[in-house]
Image 1 (cartoon, rainbow, N blue to C red):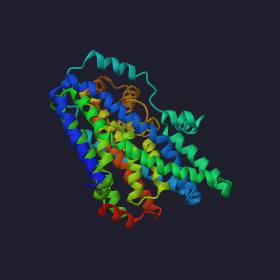
Image 2: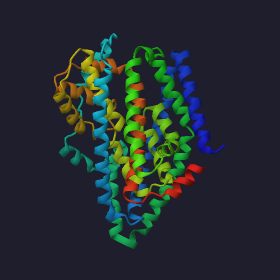
Image 3: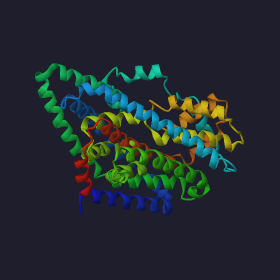
Image 4: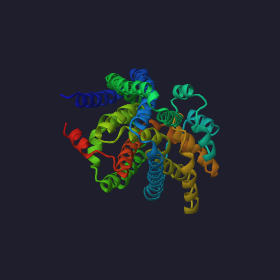
Length: 413
């Protein structure tokens, strides 16, 4: 059995085992969280050097400096189109299916206290603040914090300087190329621990919340996942059809990182492996290393869809009917506030709480969502990953740099 298929099988077995362990022995399952945390920490130590090395080599090593601005513009255009459709779809699904109507679940005082704390958490950045924040004061600090946008900005300027210096910079470029090769091999080693991390994360989630939560919150969970699937079909599948790249081929290629994203509810867990796979799939290194990290700041499709859906859910829980004009204002607000803070814990709930407060809506519904945020986060994180993998393919085709032969060979393996 090939190593990729073996990894998929092991992750799936760990997923099933984690669910059963969390269900049957919850008192022990909740103690498994350190396994998930350990795996995520191992992944985080890869990301900064991997992104810096691959992006620098991709730009400076392949003569793509002149195309960089064009690629950046096309990337932002695609991101804005995709996230806007996600926001609109969230509003449509919430209005049609009404996930908050008739919802009646007790809210603990602990949940209300957490929501109160979220109201005082900074929610987002203005456009000016985002521009200032994108430039790192110290790249070492940026790498330590895992700030992908700042790492990308530093790598771009570094690559431009390498190109300007020319032949004298060749040893640095060779060193970074070697770093790329080492980090991808490093990723292979870390992925061997993925089943253990998946088991720890999923068993702790089920053990903490109980399997019964899937029944109590069944309607909300079903509508959220149905909305995410609708986005995949309406936007991502259509985008792949337009560029003549099989969506199922992309899905087959990224099955391992998608499973990681789902089971750990962490985009970071899936990012290194997804970048490696998309390069093997036929997307140039320069595009993969630019679009993927940028996507986790500007193209969180699953999270943005969830925000509009959750906003209307919170209003419906308390019986408030939000007029269409206000819904559109909420959507435009979320276009800005949903970007630039991907690294904040419970980021979607923080933004949601701030949005509700801004529009004078009760935040009590957020306390309801707290109980199942991890389960909902698993779905939206997976869609974030798939959306960014599709984005790299779209940009590569838009630039006429996608390698169809490489894709066919990869899928034939």
